[in-house]
Image 1: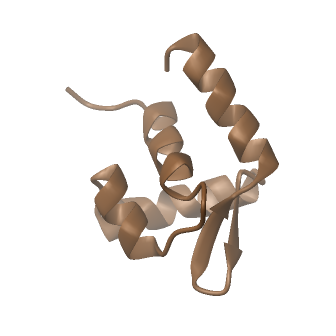
Image 2: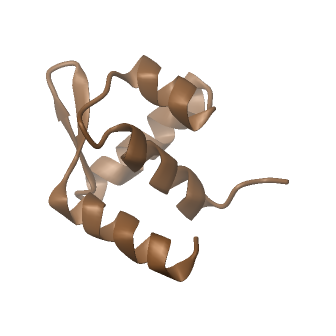
Length: 74
């Protein structure tokens, strides 16, 4: 069964809650680098994740998105 874009985004944001390198996100979200790169770009454009040095960190807006998705069961 395929995961939705929202479910993948939530997994990436969860992996980066405390800050994570791209490799950690790839393994935690069970994705490949090509897919993770696309999602990270999309999440950054929407202000849900920040790139700080070599780490990605979920923003406050990203945490809110995660909570809403959780409440909706996504």
